[in-house]
Length: 282
Image 1 (cartoon, rainbow, N blue to C red):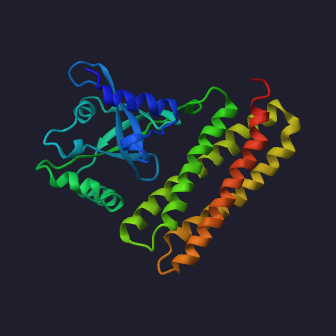
Image 2: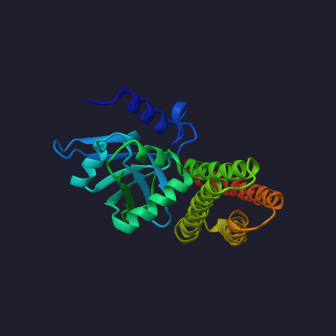
Image 3: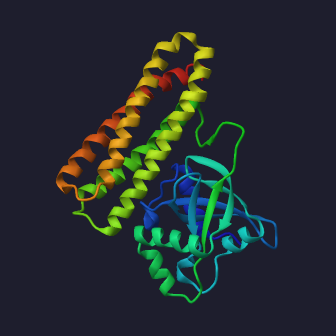
């Protein structure tokens, strides 16, 4: 039977591009749709996740430290292909249960970021599984939760803005520490990789399409390509500022503040240039 609490979170998640309030406010959530092991029925569940670089994220079958694996975990053992909703993108993924040293290393990274995972493990005798969700190739354009191409740009950019806000908040409220350092690395990795992939898609797919359909846009798109090169340098500087060991905390915070503001200004500039162009015919 559907879980009323879960359904409320799912509805809020979908309506607000992945943002929810209440108990899960500020948490990293995704919606995981699995196929029932016995019934074959599709089930959607809100699940906490951990960004792990590349084409995968990690989900942890903690069930709050219960002695029984969650239903979604048993489902994906039987049917490993799953659907993932990030709030912005919907995509198919292959679920792979990590084992041995790979599982232990991934678990250690997750616990370093959020000690709550370790607290769940202490409550149960079962070894809590760690599952990697590998994005499956998609021959078409990304499935973005937006009603127009211009809105799609804004929705994706707002994800980047939230990541930048997290980085600024953590830098502003700490003097350092292992756990925070791990969380900063996660947020920076998520932002840096996401923005790189976004700009690569624009440079190789979106911009050539716009140039073909609207030749007069060539100067604007050339300027945006040059802007992407400058932003790549800023992203490298941001990663260095967040991960550098032994740096002065106050100086690091000032540098992160400067870089994140510049990166946000780029997002706004790109919206000003692209959204009217993309939605001209809409």
